[in-house]
Length: 291
Image 1 (cartoon, rainbow, N blue to C red):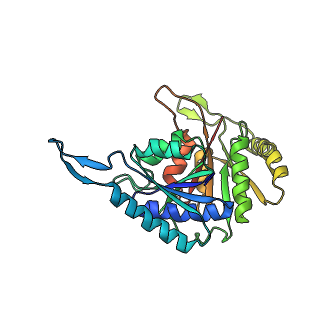
Image 2: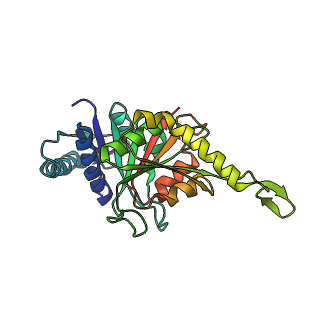
Image 3: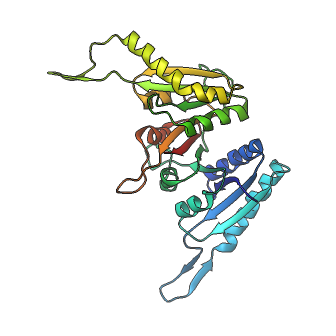
């Protein structure tokens, strides 16, 4: 198998949801599916050097069961399985670097009901060299009544520093699904200092909004030409990029955000918009690395 959609499983409902999402995506792309189980200790050793049990057979059995269910559900889909004795994040990043896409399940953290991604998902989102999709097991099956019941991909656009890679990914995903693309650009008036603290400046909001719409249209122009089959809704919102994106996420098939591929002294980092989206979006989130 050459380039494929790769997903990781750990036996959780989240990873099962990720396998299902990844299989559908592989069918849409006309590529195979690779399912990986990674764990740093595939056998347990006691202090006296004796082995408690070899965990590899259990991992292989779980993989085999998942692969067989997937093949039955998606006839004709080529499915490959791999067990890797390594840190899950490191293994998935290494295995995914030459693949079409990485797909992982997202899970909650303790009692924080809005936080949906565990340490592996965050590490992969921050370091993966290919797009990563994070899928919830408990995502809504029906869109809210106030959201149009049609397929829609939402992409967050930084109008002043738009990424061709992010826009191409979002347009291509909308085209594969026959979905509308909603391009969202959130902005804020530049604040000013006053005795009472930071306050919005006295500006002509309508004029500023018109200017932001022009910026967004210019950012989308090349991608629209490359994907004329995709219906596009361009939307600007006052209140910042994060609020704008999350306000548009309900009922979406997919939310697409970018991640700048630059290094931080403490390692690769997610930007604030990507971080908020993967923790709080009710829809699957694609994180697309770009320069």
